[in-house]
Image 1 (cartoon, rainbow, N blue to C red):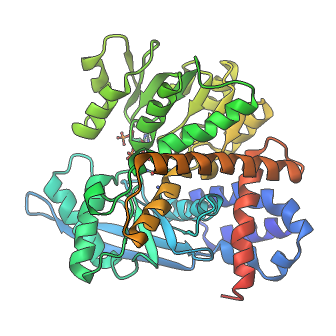
Image 2: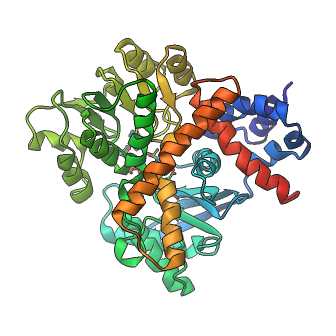
Length: 443
Ligand code: NDP
Ligand code: 2IT
């Protein structure tokens, strides 16, 4: 049995009830084998065995009181996966589906993603099974404060720097920052995605979506085409989806779908992203409300978003949202590229189908790295006590996304997997972390 297969088998046996974590490891580990064959020093140092075991896992109780005076209890997580190349860095997810398996898969992905940005940030992830949907601002604040009453012991600007993810945006980051400061008395940049008035970075709101489009732009360039005139199918209507749509439209594409967990809208003449911003960012409403503002659209309650014909698909909602049935529909309708905005958007069989059918596919750890990259730029600005201009941050983001693309395609080619960005991203992300681990001894 190969080294990677053995480590994978043992890791799965050790944590048997964590299917999403198994999936994330199954996507990465086998692609590393050619690299590990050439460099036996990593196996000798047990690098993979160490990498699949988080440095620290924190699970805690979060009691809070709702508006009716009832005491509610949620479960909180922070998985500090790897600090080999810098402080733990990764978002917090508030969603009822959150489990240890979900947080471990996200934290594992984050190690490789953060390494790909070229910036000194380790991997971590956290969150809670709290559902912010339908809660009042006061309830969200009470929850966030209680969450930080425990979390503050483990985070800090040089130790672990959380940020947003599903269900965690500017409002939640603000409440968590306020409570962190109150408990510790420190303004050491313990979170990113902060408001601009208290240390946030310009472009952080747009970063993941814009970055996704910047990387996809390079994919299209290598196919000798561009966004101009392309039909785009985007899923989700949250932070990542909105700013992916905005940038793609600026580059001449037409976005024909967006969705939420209830259903999707299809607008053959193109979606007006400003309407989606009003519904989602201002009113915290549902995507079906789009029809109240625009006539040229239909709403599908449930249904398969990927059955709408498109040239490029950008899944931007959640894990495993693009499965074999979705992949079949995209392939049959002539889609040429899929780039993940959400983490692990695509099931393993769907990735295989896309790749075997010649659909150019980018895994999230490369294509959605723009968010965390700008988070690291926010950390740099906080340390320097400076603010950079929108243009400066946006240009840095573009440069980072373009170099991620160049780096992972070159590495894929060097290891006999030309055009396989999954292999390229895994090997490129792994190399830097593994070398840092070798240099730091057995820790
Ligand atoms: P938001 O909370 O802003 O938006 C999430 C969107 O996805 C909503 O439209 C939501 O619909 C939909 N969604 C969430 N869960 C499900 C589900 N189980 N089934 C169907 N739809 C669902 O989150 P983000 O936009 O920040 O995150 C989207 C994805 O991008 C996630 O996978 C996240 O990990 C990833 N990501 C985010 C980054 C960031 O900087 N924010 C950075 C890199 C990756 P509904 O409102 O109905 O729940
Ligand atoms: O998945 C991700 O990369 C994020 N949710 C963003 C993490 C961050 O620290 O900005």
